[in-house]
Length: 271
Image 1: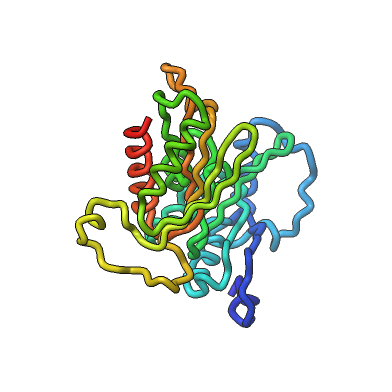
Image 2: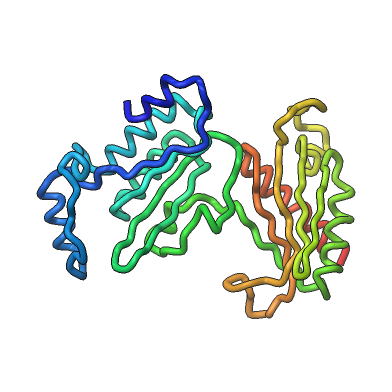
């Protein structure tokens, strides 16, 4: 197994990192060179065993993913570099086939060389969009769902007024604890929710009690920041202030999205 050290160790790991063999054969190496717009600016010194593997990098990373399905939370994040952008959709299709929605895609650019990296996790910690998503239009259909949501408030005359309305809205939600920090340009709150108490079904008593007072893992943990918007979130109306919800921890995306929507409605009603 590629992840043999994890299989035989009693320890838990923070991450794995891999630079896989990119190519499936010598012919694959030649085809890749032909497709490059610019010629190579360095001599490739990799040994054949380092550069080629049956099925290429897609097959190699798929093996890592298959092994990770057995290890799951023994490692926080499984990661690998990719030499071909075309490999990303194939790997993401494996994630979706196994309902793995906690993943990230990024890219590295150094001179003429461009590489990509992909990571996935079976734990509840979530990455902000600045780490988990890239803006390449070719890859938008395989990007993970957004963990950062921007809600604009044209009725807010200042960040302080918006932050005050936000604090009032959060205070009305049962089972939510808030830790605040304020800087010169923004106000940020870290919110912990032990259970869903804000949805319509929860308020009508239709949801089961899934959490107990001494449960360690929260149903939801997210950061909420009041700030002036930045491109590309500035609309034609030149909206001055917004609330940014960033999912930090949790299993259920719908809970995070419903929480953000509920808080935004309450804030709007207050302004």
